[in-house]
Amino acid sequence: MTSSARPLLNRRLAEFGTTIFAEMSALAQQTGAINLGQGFPDTDGPEAVREAAVRALREGHGNQYPPGPGIPELRTAIAGHQQRRYGLAYDPDREVLVTVGATEAIAASLLALVEPGDEVVALEPYYDSYAACIAMAGGTRVPVTLRPHAGGFALDLDELRAAVTPRTRLLLLNTPHNPTGTVLSRAELAAVAELACERDLLVITDEVYEHLVFDGAEHIPLASLPGMRERTVTIGSAGKTFSFTGWKVGWITASPELVTAVRSAKQFLTYVGSGPFQYAVAEALRLPESYFDDFRADHQAKRDLLSAGLAAAGFEVFRPAGTYFVTTDIRPLGESDGFAFCRALPKRCGVVAIPNAVFYDHREEGAPFVRFAFCKQTAVLEEAVTRLKALAG
Image (cartoon, rainbow, N blue to C red; front, side, top):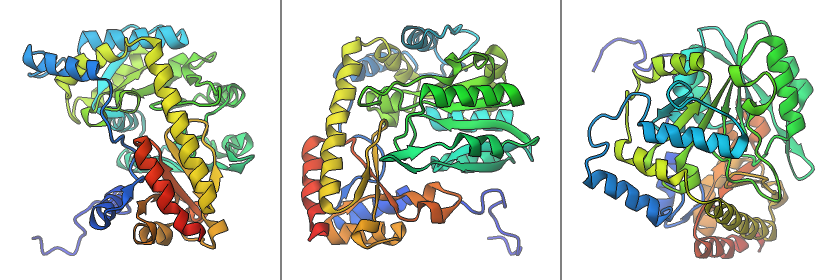
């Protein structure tokens, strides 16, 4: 152990300790509570996709280092997916890069594109890796807060415009948005595109929940809007869409110049990964449209089940238009501190949730909000709803 008084952890990361997900998952194990905190399914995805991974292993595909940009089969499948669904044409050899999950895609993009001192505007609350990756890149994060409005959370476009300064390098967007479930509308995205073009900004869009939009909501990639294809890095992932989160297969699509820049950083992070799973995900992306329709319908039903149960338990519920998370307000229960509430909840009624304040720079903004995941088996959600009724009593 060093005897120096200097802290071991560098100051860029000093504010980031053990994640709340590790703490709450440990609480779930200790208490036997139902874990609706961390966002991972409790069942595997399609059997045909799993068998494709087994077949790749047995046939020796991907057991050694795959190509740095990703296997050609997967890059071609990603490009095909973007073309079929959104009319976005990408060259699989020059405009697609496979990453070890979306988290690496976020990290590599920020490390490649942000210089120390650059400002990065992000929608608050945000996935916790955003803040850490901006810090590692030496950037300064500038939050623009989504606030409760009309049963959901809304983006104030005037506030977004005001957040952009001469030091702003890029915008970091997430839609469908974790944790609020907001899906940015075409009008909102058009305003973002206009701002990016006017101020010559790059944009990173995290679109991992693209296939989980409900009630007729539409996911619109920002890159599909005028002027945005050449300045947008679009991030996708197989984990959320196919329920194989442990495989860690993500990707970016972007212009050749942006892909080259991101690959320059990515090659010194993991270099490559998920070899056999890349072959399986290539097959998954070519599943018939009925798979995606059924997947969405199943999660919408689970959303409705959990939302109704939370409302009956006394929460104010913000019904999500996308993702697989429900945000609630605990103030109707006479509570105001999400951290204290979530730490007590496993013993009170045997359910684990996540305090949204961890996703905020302005912790006070998120203090009364708590997030529950509904990407679980229906029977598990029904039992959680039964347990949560104790709060109403």
